[in-house]
Length: 370
Image (cartoon, rainbow, N blue to C red):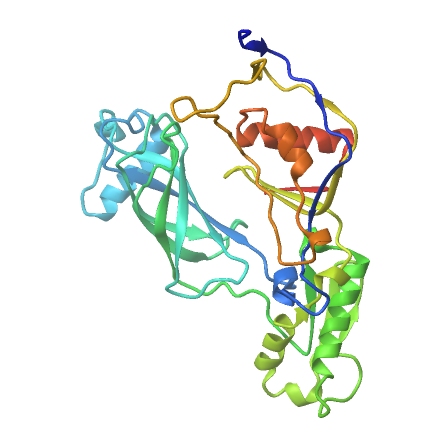
């Protein structure tokens, strides 16, 4: 038996790679709704921000010699009835760190007394905020001069042990005033999410809403939904629904849509934080040769016979997804699996390969990186 042959540079060809994952079983099995595709115009995330102090650090905070940190600390002590006439009295303090505090308001908005997560990041020389606690910090809107919308406070949780100058205060922000979004008037717009943008998709959304509303014989009149462009569908609330538009809006957002009629492009959706990779519809990769870092393939010729004491180990980072559709419509990732099963590569390396393929024009799909 020959010894394993290491190959330091990997070159292989992926030719006409096909991975087919249907989005629906049949034309009458609608599995998505308008709310999966679109949002109300005006709905969108917003960010609150402020500056605060993380206290209780075991000597890993800012030096008291940094006046930008000493001043707010002195102000906190002043408010607590302990005046500090000379900032030099705080020079030996290393238990406090000045931090930037941010809070993301979800697209649906937030109401008074809602609790939201807060992110903190050091601004000066603090080495670590592990074990610290964020002192009461007012959070304002992103535009200078805006009012205070929330108060943040709580224990700091370090999310990445290798980076101890940033952290999260879970449910640390309490809203003190409402941040409404997506208000509905007589006429409002639906905005398709970027991944679903397209003239065909917007047209089908408008058709589905009109068909759903006028399916009842008691509903008559002009169309309630009109396509404006490749992302916007305008909705006009009918007269009978004006007195109580809530149920009408709920019905619109829950209207089922046949995804096969949307004619969406093939997509590869990547979550760079978790390493998740989702391949949808019909993804093809043209003929291409790939080299990546110092990957190694070990080949044994002839291959050994597996046994209980010396089993054959298979490592798989991609998995096919089968559906209950017709055999011709089942997910096929065979070619991709055959190429990648030979490589013990991380999800991040796979993402880098996909991004490079997309840049080269060989990935015949829309690449969405979250």
